Image (cartoon, rainbow over all chains, first blue to last red; front, side):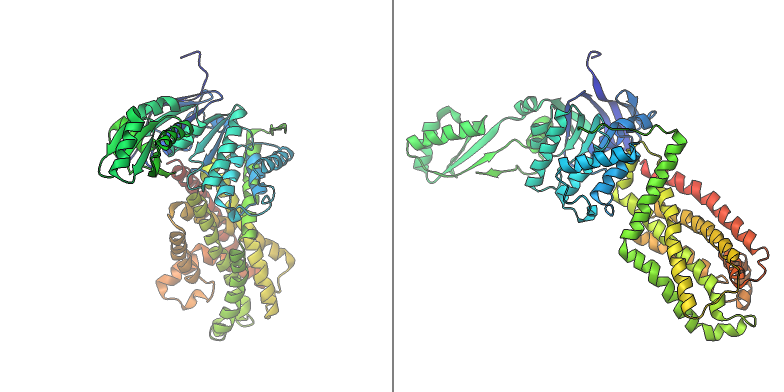
Length: 320
Length: 269
């Protein structure tokens, strides 16, 4: 333990609002230069945790430090080394993108010249040059999130909190946000990200902590978690009983589940591209026609299902 | 990340002051960019002045001291009323900041928290000076003339500035407490409307029923109106100016810490 360099550390964090216990003892550590994803459904306590670690919120018990500073006792020191972005922070809508950046830079104690230069650099980097001198209220959702993130990077703080940075974004904006976050990770910034999307945590984070109902229910790398949850599954449906039977024989042991009434079979796959092709090749050799197929990815719901045994919403399906 | 970052190394009190200045600049930019509100700050005083002077002028001028027209009497009342109602904007600005989460962003920065409130309150001076100037110019157009020397106008500016700060801090409290913009509007209305109308702003208080009159002539708005009115008309000010200043300072001394404490408490939940 002492040989590891933890930048963010929370031990047994407890927080209640009146009688409602929102956090029931959260533990987490983020090593320098890595990203930890805090994964959980709405109301799990993700934002509460981030708000405590970023000094916005007091807590009832436990300890929390950032860069060795106590978030409660040394809040000012903590504020000097963190950037916060996402649903618990915002930009000024009546100011332009550039004005937002310069203002926040000045509040981070940058000199006027330095804030200006850095703002210009970030606008370039975040593809906001054209919109730089328009009020932020005219920005699209994706642009606003990019500005929001840029604002928290204005003084290049070594620690960044990203509170659900892609919630509500369309797929394209989400991808561009991911690209930006990946670039940020290359600079050695320590990041705590919260998300509802397993895929997002999977794509970006070094370590994942799954929380539900204010408690940590699992932690590990995405591979470790997935192995607990299970792999992707391919569901194949055939036109009639004859084809169905032949297909079952052809696929053999790969089939993990069947539905005789709908003539469908489920196959476990580990690497979508390779395995799906293999399955289809096998069927094609025997001239067996597949009526329809669907890939089921393990979702957050599956994580909860396997970790807590309680059923969440219906499975997310990805039609192929 | 090519740019070398240069940080200010000022002492702490100077940085806090700087934070407030940055926030004043922000709130002032809001006032300029918020076109609808700016138009309100422009036209509302014109409408009040023109309508009141024409509608009530005939009836009320009979109870005024000889030689004073209703327009001359009204000017001070309308100016003070506009400043008082203008503080609603501060309350809305504070409330909007709290609702939109930008305050959270500010609080995650190594800045002085109260700079946000300072910014909204102080930038009110800017908006009120626009409104007041517009009103005096309109007055001049429709026949208002003041016999007072220039120095009186400096006193007036000073009293109004103090009064603006007092009401803006009061409004800041409402902005922090209220849960929505609508709540801000009715709360400020409930407080400011009776204070301005049960005063000597629009009519001499002599005609009021007994108890209302005692309240009206002693309450802060009347003191400020009387002080400004005497200064405009070049009449002896009496105790009104001192009382106006004491009232304003008193309101500031009480509401500033209350607003600050409530703001801190509300934002750390």
